[in-house]
Length: 302
Ligand SMILES: CCC(=O)Oc1c(C)cccc1C(=O)O
Ligand SMILES: [Ca+2]
Ligand SMILES: [Zn+2]
Image (tube, rainbow, N blue to C red; front, side, top):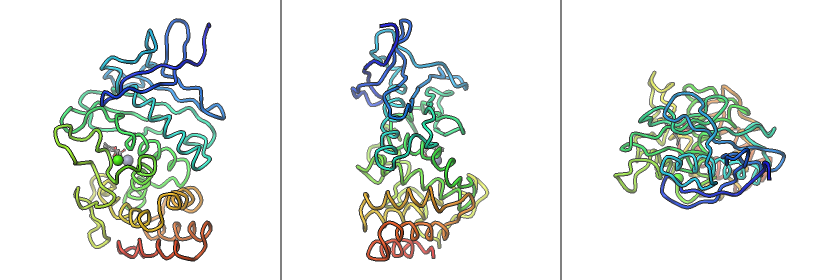
């Protein structure tokens, strides 16, 4: 065969075996997934500890089994899982709902305890080995980053103060919806030497220094007005909503709020209103509506 879709495999950041959608071309196998509907493509690249986009992640025998390939394996696999979540659950075709290619770059810089969406692609550091290991090794982190892209193309929540904290919260909340086995964020790649901890918790934001009530809103000029701190307040409201109406209904109202009602300057009170409008649209003014009111009352947002 000259070129085309192939099935490979590899080991992820935690040493776990996984199959991969790859592409054979001219003697090399690429982390390039063409199996998605509507021609959605997922491609994974390797910066090789530089700070450029890097070149395609390739392998000579379709077995991505070296330690240096683990971050590539997970970035690729998990981007595919997040694509599938948005398509299967919300009928959204990639972050722009137009099938744009989802690009990830791993091994960005050195000892880089960070992951981000740069406006065009996801970028993952390797961590310093103490605070983080390679950040693409956590599905909720990948979902968090790709949700920044979805938010950017929908509500466009400005990354500052309350709209910025909402931006962060949407990424954490969809990180939960994609990986609903716990209410923690980043636990799989955070502090390898400490078990049971996480970057954040949506069930108890205060466990990691975040407020869970407006009375404790953190006014600061750093971190774009504390967007990674104040996200605890809408995160707690989301947790309250999930516990009372269940994940299936909660993810529908959150997706509708993000894509229909929220705008770039929405604040926490606007988020409450957007979620109530979404709930009314989908389920009426019954128990679900009351549950969302109670969820936001409990965090002091009206
Ligand atoms: C859960 C993923 C996450 O929070 O990634 C970030 C990290 C690790 C550092 C700085 C910013 C971010 C982010 O994506 O907001
Ligand atoms: Ca998690
Ligand atoms: Zn974020």
